[in-house]
Length: 282
Image (cartoon, rainbow, N blue to C red):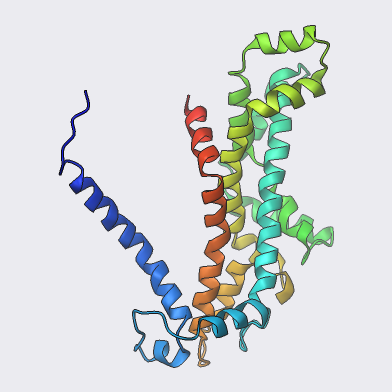
């Protein structure tokens, strides 16, 4: 029986709205700051209502850049971050699902040893691997390149483990039925396992895209040219620590623009993301 109470849901809604306001207020403040002039922000006289410099600031941010520490437009930074995030997400999923398929459905020497070696890499902190990885990338002349930005980050032990656990829940009858139909390993993988893994891949894509988008340390190490820097590095360079005046409207506009792609991915893939998480928990 469902009880309908007129004010029963009032308190949860108030709590939810309070949480939304607390989380959204800094974002709103950044947007308001991006529409006002630099003098108002620097003098602490910024209004809580949007100003009249929206088009001017966002046009300069996207296509011109700042006149200080980095002159590269944010459009280039957004493109670099998009390439990095997409390559990392798709690369991690592709490599992980193939390696998990090999571990679960093929019998070869040292199969479990290889799996545990992959699993042990989860316990290695990033700081331990950063110097040898940088040395290899530098020796291969991949500094300041998209390959150097993405290739060292596209292997994922976590995704391999998640796909392995999911494949182990797939009934053996499906494999037997595919064999009876004359399907080989590739056709079974393409026609059966990939469609079944659709929601898991979608959930992983959302997580890995945001992970790749928010990378800071690795792009900071291997990029020296302004035209190869990602948007996180760009925001850091825009905030001047010397006597020069920081262009706060451009910085705030860049921060707002940096939030849009991850938000768009989450919104567009929300249903698959939730289903993937729920089915993974099962």
